[in-house]
Length: 554
Image (tube, rainbow, N blue to C red; front, side):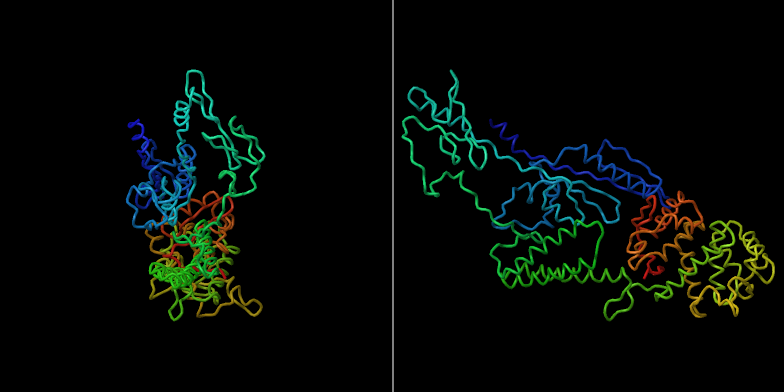
C-alpha cells in the first residue's frame, strides 16, 4: 500500500517541444525546419513560405498524434520557475505546489515573426501569461478517488448479529457485503445508508422502521435533493478576480467587460494597435477607480502600468500609419510626403505598364527610369552611370533597341551615351511624352515634383540590400510595385487584404508561377515580412526599414 501511494503522488513533468525555422546560410533563400523531439529529422525547404507551411504542418501532426493533456501533469512552465510572471495566490486560492492555477492545457507559443513554435503542457494561468499563446486542448477535471464504502459495509456486517448486512448492501455467500448504488436528483452516487434520495421514488426501508409521513418542511429534505445555489460567474481581468460585492456596480461590470474584451483581442489573428491602446486606457481608468474603492496599492500600480501600455500602443499605431504624435515631427520620414505625390508615382508606373515598347523586365525597368527623367517635357539628360547602375545584362543592346523602336531619341550614339559622365551628359527625348497644343501629355505634375519622383524611384531601385543581393530587374520592379500598393502601416493592398498575383506578375513581366521566388528574394532582402502567396493574392507587409520608401494608399 505504501509503494502504491508513493507512486500515485509522483508527478510527471509536462511535455514541451519546439519547432524552429532557421536560414540555411547567409544570403540564401532556403530554410531549415527542425523539431526538438529526438525522432524528428530536419528538413530543408526552398523558401521561407514553404518552410513555414511545413513547420506548421509538422506541429499539427504532433498535436493530432500525441495524447491529450494530462490532469495530473506538472506545469512545464512552473517547472522552469516561472514565478516572475505568476501572481502569488490569494487567501482563497491555494494551488497545489506543482501547478500555478487552472486546468492543465496544451498551449502553442510562437514569436511574432513566425520563426519558432513551442508546445507546452502547462496550467491555464501560465498559458494566459504568454501574450502569443493559443490553447489547443484542455485536460478534463481530475476525478476524486472513490470512497471505501466496501470496507465500512464489511465492518457494519461483522458488527450486526448474525452477520446480516446493513440496509443498502447485500452479502454474498462466504464473502463481504456488496454496496448497492442508490440514485438522487443530483446524479448517481454510492451510499452505505438507505435513505430517500429523490422525490416520488420508492426506496426500500428497514423492516422494523414504520412508514413515515411525507415531510412538508423543505429544510428536512435530503441534502442531495436540494437545488444547489448558483452564483453568477465572477469576472476576471489581469489575473485578478472581480469581487461580487464590488461597488459601484457599474465599476464591477466595466472590469468584467474589459476582461472579456482583452481575451477576445488575444484571440485575434491580426493586431489592432488603436483598439489595444483604447483597451489599456479604459483599464487604467477602471483600475484607478478600483484602487480608490479598495485602497489597494497593487491596483494603483497596475493602473499606472496600463497608462504606459496605452501610450506605447498609441505611439506604435501612429508610427505604422505614418502620422505624427501631437507636437512632434512626422513619425515616418517618407521621401514622398503628400498623398498627391503618391498618386503621381502610381500614375507613372501605370502609364509605363500600358505603353512599354519592348517586352521583358529589364526593358520595363529602363523605361520607368527614362520616363521619370523626361516626364515633364519629353526631354532630359542621361549619363552612363544612370544606365550601368541598373541590373541590365546588356545595356548597350537594350538602349539600341529602344532607339530603333522610335520610343527613345539620343543626341549621339549609344556608345557615347554609355561613356558619358555627369559633366557632359547626353540629351535624350521621348516623343510620346512631348506635349503640344492638342496633347498636354499623360502627366499633370509640375517641374518641381518630377525630380522628386525620379529620386524616389532611384532610391527604391538602388536600395542597398537590393544591390548587395544582386537582385535582377524583375525583383526591383516588384519592389516598386509593392512600395506604391501598401497602406500607411506597410500592409499590402487596400486595408491589408493583399494584391492580385496576376496584376503583379504582369507588371514584373513574369509568369505567375515565378512570383513566389521574387517574393522570397524580397523577404531575404528584409523588404517583406509575413509574406504569403496564394493562387490569387499576395499578402504581407513592408518591413519598418523600408516604410520611408512607401507611397501609402489613400
